[in-house]
Amino acid sequence: MKVMKFGGTSVGSAEQIKEVAHLVTSRGKNIVVLSAMSGTTNTLVEISDYLYKKNIDGAKETINSLEKKYFITIDKLFTDEKYKEEVLAEVKACFNYIRSFTKDLFTLFEEKEILAQGELMSTAMMNIYLRSLGFKSAMLPALDYVRTDKNSEPDTQYIKQKLQALLDKYADADIYITQGYICRNAYGEIDNLQRGGSDYSASLIGAAINAEEIEIWTDIDGMHNNDPRFVDNTKAVDTLHFEEAAELAYFGAKILHPTCILPAKLNNIPVRLLNTMKPDAKGTLIYNSTASRKIKAVAAKDNIIAIKIKSGRMLLAYGFLRKVFEIFETYKTPIDMIATSEVGVSVSIDNEKNLDNILDDLKKFGTVTVDKDMVIICVVGDLEWQNCGFESAALDALKDIPVRMISYGGSNYNISFLVKKEDKVKALNLLSDNLFNK
Ligand code: ADP
Ligand code: ASP
Ligand code: MG
Image (tube, rainbow, N blue to C red; front, side, top):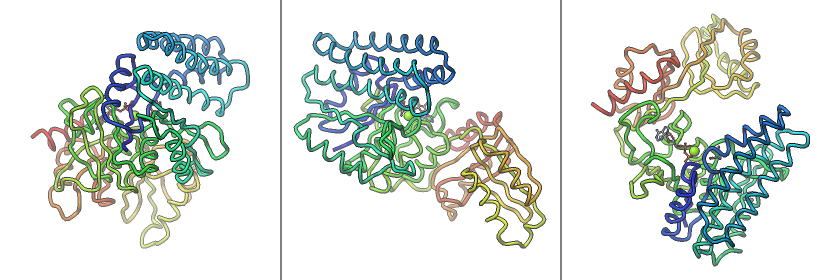
């Protein structure tokens, strides 16, 4: 059995829902994971913002206009009145539930309940649509089997057991439908796996059933060798190692959520990135082997802060780095890049929340300087250190751009450069020109 995950744009309209229905029913008995229709989660965030600000009129207006969009989609999707009534009842119940929060106290807890409605509605629509076509479609409610533990990590044993019980219960189904993104926390409350987290759901489900493959269906034909939003003439990469894909996802390749790779990698399950609009395109296969001696792709991660700590005391001192890292640990702030010299250390972080506290504490150890609005440009491929020429090719491509930090040798798969925000697009294009399009 495979897991097939479809993102928001893949189920963004009645026509697209029809196409996905056609696609999944022609590929056997698999688990289909769906995101909310595109734009829905953003609108649900907007509604929650109105409710936090006690702007009830703003919330109601936004709820009504979102509801109208769903009614139009349902009208286009269903011809049979019986199924149309059934789906309308479910979707109306979701909207009335969202409306119920316009009356009372609004907290993070209520927001999560609202955010869950998008995936509940898209899956209800697909499930009933498939049944209207004559298929035995079974709903696997994610809120009944996807659970996180007290550390907000997925409770993999629980997921495995509960999911298996549901699959057994609906053993005679032709196909299974389930929600991405949503889950319950250790206390049974509705929660989610963070924005874009449907990819993670797919991977967790794939791991739980030891799937033959995890397919991530989206609006582009695989992982491209550069960010198509900023660079023209990018091309899909045929194969990536799990580690390469993890680096690209972490450093900004939006096609894949960074958390998606680990469950697949731990269970040795291939991940394939595919295009819903071009189902026959080969896409990208992510697995534990890949073409060697090649630079594969480039990605960029925004909103990075570089911090330099210069200290006379670092000279010949051990324990200095530990003290520096402990400060970041205290404030639960992960470090992305690091570069050291005899007199100092530079690190980069992507979270400004505790910056003032971190800087205050670092100042006890040396002179601290901060550069904000930086971008990590990550070049990924076979960068094993004994292969000559690859890191120098990347460096050479960026020779006209000021580089604040370089990180190389941390893994066999990447070299990262820290540049100014205003140089990002130029840097991405120079890397494509020099590494892929020569
Ligand atoms: P979905 O809604 O299906 O989860 P996303 O919007 O999250 O889709 O991801 C797909 C988008 O990722 C593409 O439309 C593309 O603009 C963007 N993207 C960014 N970097 C890359 C890359 N290296 N390769 C492919 N797509 C990328
Ligand atoms: N619907 C959620 C979001 O927009 C989850 C996802 O699409 O992966 O973030
Ligand atoms: Mg996505």
